[in-house]
Amino acid sequence: MGSEVYPEQVFKGIAASPGVAHGKVYLFVPKELEIPDTPVEKGGEDDEVELLEQKLMETRQQVLKLQKEVAERLGDDEARIFDAHLLVLEDRALIEETIREMRESGRNITFCFHAVAQRYIDAFAHIDDEYLRERANDIRDVSKRMLHNLVGEAHYGLARLGAERVIVARDISPSDTANIEKGKVLGIITDAGSKTSHAVIMARSIQVPAVVGMRNITKLLTNGDEILVDGYDGQVIINPSEKTLFRYGKFQEEKKSLEKKILAQIRRSTTTRDGKTISLMANIEGANEVERIRQYGAEGVGLFRTEYLFLNAPEFPSEEEQFQAYDAVARAMAPDPVIIRTLDLGGDKFPNSVYRTDTETNPFLGLRAIRLCLENTDLFKTQLRAILRASVHGNVKLMYPMISGAGELERANEILREARGELDRKKAAYNPDIKVGAMIEIPSAAVTSDILARKCDFFSIGTNDLIQYLLAIDRVNERIAHLYEPTHPAVMRMIQTVVDAAHRENIPVGLCGEIAGDPVLVPIFLGIGVDELSIVASGLPAIKYMLRNVDFADMKKLTDEVFKLDDPKKIFATAEAFYKKHVSHLIA
Image (cartoon, rainbow, N blue to C red):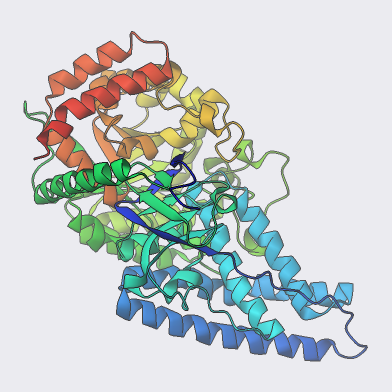
């Protein structure tokens, strides 16, 4: 393309890594690997198994080497991306299933490994959890490397990228990005992906703008096309005009000025101009994230997702293993609070056969989260004992996910009492006054929140699931994802119901999920009365900066104003105008 022939074209995606880049396109389309499908010669099964084990070892050595190189160039956090790859290669369930497939089908081990890995990828790809859905890419990436080794073809990724380019791809794996020279990539654009994808993590680590979720941008571009990437607002502009380039030059200077001001306030308290203090906490998956969230100014852990201990293990982690993980976070964050959510897994979320339950027609409405724990009391009590033991060494709070009503809450608390009794008999120490709360993420829980509030020490509103269940919107379904509207009047009214019920019983309410980290929407929900926010660490500075530059009284006025509106788009526009008035004018 050329701007003298083709007009400027603007496309919208998901803003994933901040910044603005302008340059030529490098269309990254990896060659499709041909998977051989041949019968195994009679008596050759053991040779096939030996080949599999040999290539597993070879692939593991490659990943370890890659991990070491990434740690040296980018840091330990980025290198931990490859921990999941190593776990896949050590997953005996996957390996044994591959061998069984080979023996039963009589097809070669390469074909069988590909078939089994694809089943795992498909299972994860349909999970209704953005972070877990992205883990399908871990399996896809490492299985692709393994298949290259089985077939005998080298895997280069983007290591051979020449001149400075904006990379445009269907998707980009950690292996593809690991060997990129830092100065060679101007920006990253992908058809697929989300804010939690590894392509995004790598883009942030090398500080280049990224826009993901573009659907079919790869079909519109060719190598050498001129493009502009806006990683702030998620815009991609093909053939940007001189006027656009000038505008974005000024825009980038303003953004950098604002970012400096935001970072300067990280260590300050999260208090509005008129003196209202908001507790601003972070979501984590493990102790390795504590240092990072401290750097971003987190005042506690509002959501410790414990399921990642289970997903990353070949078998159920023991009580001692869980205790060590919870205790490390509790000690590191003390005296700040750490809210540990009990296991939030479902029948379709299990990475190996050890965890699988019977296939369900609709797993998102099936045996998951607290329901799974109430049916597997030994598993549940093991986790509860570990959490209770960790409560001695920090400000630990315990939270149940996906509570639908008082019956489930009472049954969970009954099992908690049993876990306490077991620790008492062992004379094991724990905090007898540990706070116990519930996630409000099902409409039935929100509607009966007045009942639940009498039986809880705190609430945390899980907005991702609550909005999805309330509006009957599957965010994974691209055809209707646009109907997922956090500013729908029903969403705001339901959150208001929960907050009012909690405050009548004098218990605090936290908000977690994507909207809790959106500086445009946060003022509405704080105006409703939400007491705490828990978000991804990188979003903390922007929220803190916004809150320190507004009056709580103005947020309440904004809430009153938007509650009079009936159109989600008008509500969002009103909130956006409020944000621009209180934040944008501060850029200088």
